[in-house]
Length: 558
Image 1 (spheres, rainbow, N blue to C red):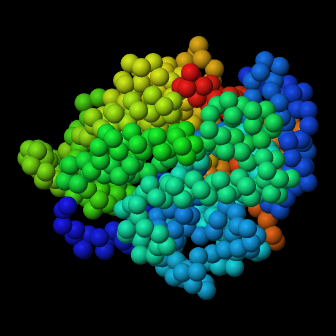
Image 2 (cartoon, rainbow, N blue to C red):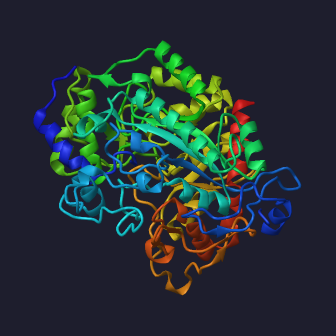
Image 3 (cartoon, rainbow, N blue to C red):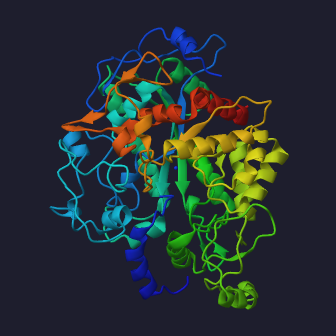
């Protein structure tokens, strides 16, 4: 194992707080209304919901489910990274006042919350109100990245408005866990994944208790598309477990040497299936023994590159791309780096790397390794969905070739971290693309770009990857929205049976037009704003999101 640089580690411990390490994303409403027969749960709104009406259930006349889909969020990330980085929980047996509590280490006025201040305000110096329930003066908010964004009644509000698929990624990052000084748990990534899977089961039981007993809640974890269809037909939310981790099954690399075997991968995939995991990343943020990553750019990339060195003993390695697709630029090119890049490239076989790179566009020299290919093929054998986001273009290229050779449709880009030059190949396979949670007008632009690459012979639906609790900002309010704001109360664009007023929890009321998606409960308001800027066409495609996802999943398992 390479000797650690204490100066670099100390620098990273501070600077990581300045970046997001996880990346840390034709429906006729009257016809759907006819398909709605009765509510799937009591209609009396719980605190934080503020939605009235009977959520639709059943299917349309031709057997299709209807509803929008989030393919990338992290409800249990409060247990990740050592368990002390994120504040609050999506539920707590003791009640909302315990679930939505600030971190004790933030101090009385938030001045000790150096990580929160850095990622949210760009400086380690700052304060925030730490009261939490019931006033919520400063959080949750669209730009507060370490406070809970997905309390269960906020998710309920989105479900009532028409959400029918939630892919919850169990998330872990050993390097970030080791760097952050406070922790309750060890940093083994797979132990963290197991704990988060347990918490998901506990949340399902918690919702059941408040909706009449075992199996009667609206929050249902599913392990296959048939279960999902049954749940959605009852008007409930089908929750799929995914995994987004930097070192699956311990597959890190040290000095270029893999630290796992094919048997570890096979055993790990079998365990994930037993846990109910249906979707998984092969690599995330740092190069591992399975694949190289698509770099982050700018200052974020500088810090993550240092993290890559601390975790593996090597900096990212890049060449000037010879293909149209490319990874993000690591650092700006200049004459000196261009001069040094060539000679340094010759040192790579010796395991010597420095953060010096040639002219952009940059492509990670590391693609999908043979171990990575073994994992992809193992996922195909098990009918699991391959998450292609975060792969370097070299890794994505080989992965898509493996999927194409197998004629395997189970592939998804869930939160805008794939070069869109691959969109046509993903759609041709029968896969799915969803956009990261940008402002409504920017999200609509991503939808238009993706739709241009669709396979016209296949069913098309679109969704989003909110990346809630992924240490990324939620969608902001659209700029200059005064001319066509979301007007309260409003009818859900996806389910005309449901009317929503401003989201409220405790003494706090949020207005999307001013605050954007301050927490998960304002997703319906965000979708209503999409209709303001892009009309009924985007609502039609969002309403088809759940059906599109299930068709892809069914084909993968078929």
